[in-house]
Image 1 (tube, rainbow, N blue to C red):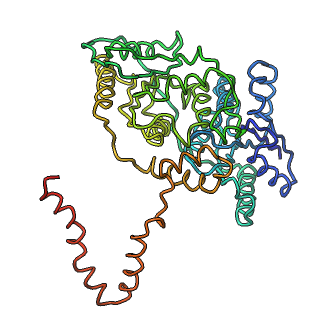
Image 2: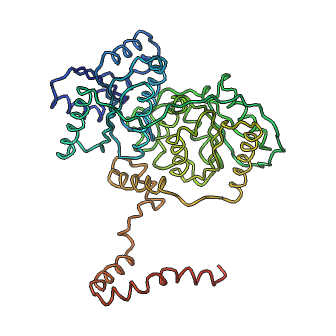
Length: 457
């Protein structure tokens, strides 16, 4: 059986993810394997049509295709996303129909669900039959249990191919066209004073709706908005996963993104991201921009500000992408003022929403408006807290940030609570004491709130 592995890691053969695949190859030798280092070679691939055609040919010839990649900033690495952009026209013609695919990733489980969902949705769009996704923690290969499960995962993949098994489709195709947006019903702008508002976009001449929505936003702000055109920013490449930023949080690349992060975004009161949907994401250029923010992702350069999104395309059909937008705001400790799309029949409604976004952003800056974090932020914080604490010797810059901001907030450091818990644990061994506690627990739980409501606070 011919198994093609699309390696999305820019590290190539030195990728941790590929070591998992090599373990499979070692213990399941009865197949013909081929690994293509997509992440490492993407710059060459996008410039060489013959090489791209050869990759598509390998995909057509394979019995099974494994997407193998590390999770980068909530999804697949930008390098792999670029390949998906390049092969989509071929896939749309049914070139990969009914072939079988699986996903293999490594991460610390930080939004690995979104990465798997994206890879699965893209696979289904290409006509592939999705079997399973194996999301390994980076050190799972050391664990005998997970080594056993890794081989079981691959066996199930092979069995599905041999049996020509049916595959459940999780995602409906993205459908429907977006009407051309012509702004109408413009109202007077809101004063921005000296507030620092940054708008980042990759809009091209062909992104008519996006450009017009951006223009409406700029019209709606009476003051300066610093516009960053990603198409004009020198982006040397996507994140390399080299970890050289671990000591001082400075990226190894010396390109235009440094000025965007540290001269534009750092300290801004609000940041607005404006992009068009490409397939099931924004452009791979946007993904490179997000991936490169790994240099600051553990200690964000923006905090306590306002975020907003202006999106052209069928975002309502892409709940995973919307969740990523929401997660990005929350995990960087910023308030999401709103997400506006052009998915409305009435252009006046789009205009009103864009203008309201401008108003809410400025009002949010003035009032310091923030909502309590949800699991999107709390869960992410706990993952990173434990990871940085364990790996602080390596991620020295992050370790310093976490110590300075009190982010090592482990429950065992709350000594008073621990002492109370120890006493109550002994008392709760008494049936009589438990009866007293249970009988009054409902009313007792709100005593503090009743006192607060009765006070002037």
